[in-house]
Length: 317
Ligand SMILES: Nc1ncnc2c1ncn2[C@@H]1O[C@H](COP(=O)(O)OP(=O)(O)OP(=O)(O)O)[C@@H](O)[C@H]1O
Image 1: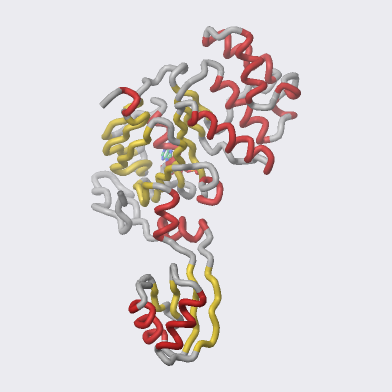
Image 2 (image 1 turned 180 degrees about the horizontal axis):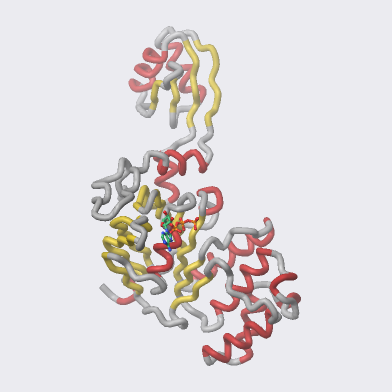
């Protein structure tokens, strides 16, 4: 494999047990291809910060390995952590100058990253007078000083206004277009989906899903919910027409993916079934995340207790 074809991040069998026996990560494996904007998504306590901390070399893993194709130097990896680590009494510009000097970057980089992050007008401001979104941008500006190719960002969306979000999206897209790679954490799919082109969903320290947002969407499609005199008869008639993704819900209504309303009406007519109503059921991303994470196995709580053998939702490739 050529260096460019190597994954920017390779994680294998990563496990982290804290001293109090909490499990931060449980046999996590994934690859993030170079040029990808990947999201590590999961509810609070699912292990995002643990994985990010190990990735950055801030935490030792109990088992497993992390390989960063470009190494871990600050010129190779730029990190934005929570809290953002801004000096309370320094202006943004002075903060950046201190870090630029430490990293051996010329003063021109300070001006460049202020401009990139849209903070030129706020350069004379101290952190307390910045909005949370501006604080994140200031932390990102710090990480960008040595122009690293890999960015690891802990919840960059938190506290950002709508305009800042579209800026962030554009910035990250541009970074990956230039051959850079991004791994960011997010507590919800709603915030991750507009930005990420690869997802690793964590649940209780294990991978509940990994793959493209499109494949996750295909696995959780919007449906039309059909109330009729016979769900089974319509399902059979739809299947005969090639629409096989229909499920009978607990309330006996039929939930159909792919088929249009016209297809359902035609199937009902052919099956001689009376239709009562057809209502769209759009799947909200938070519902998808809840379904991926709600059945997570309980954690071991004491010394010597074995970790759970497997979770109900395996890694889907
Ligand atoms: N220093 C620590 N000592 C003991 N347990 C910890 C420590 N850090 C994290 N944990 C535990 O590890 C698990 C994963 O936590 P982690 O902070 O990695 O999750 P997270 O998804 O980043 O959560 P959040 O979104 O709230 O930051 C949790 O059960 C947490 O209580």
